[in-house]
Image (cartoon, rainbow, N blue to C red; front, side, top):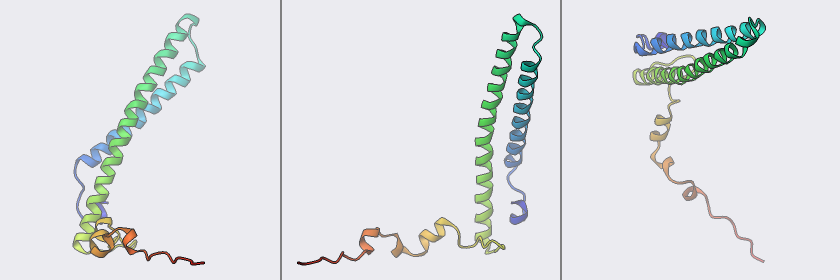
Length: 129
């Protein structure tokens, strides 16, 4: 997106993506710990406690991952919106033809198209017997 814009995106976007990557690594590490400890129980009495502790750590990591996913998606959506707005504003076109694909541009292009659909349909033909 930075290449399309020609300028760097806001500094929060790469930071959010870095935090998301960290959350992925933490979740992977917690899952590996859980699998390792489940496969190699050390003591019979402590096994239940360790398994519960591992599961709770994994749950916390997954919760953090879910939060980071939402933030990363939002950051990427914002970057996309800024990029497409910038491209449309400056009249630049790419191979994909981003110009003219904006929903706002389509909606504001023809004011007659904004009327209700019922007004545009013709009255149904009545069949007389």
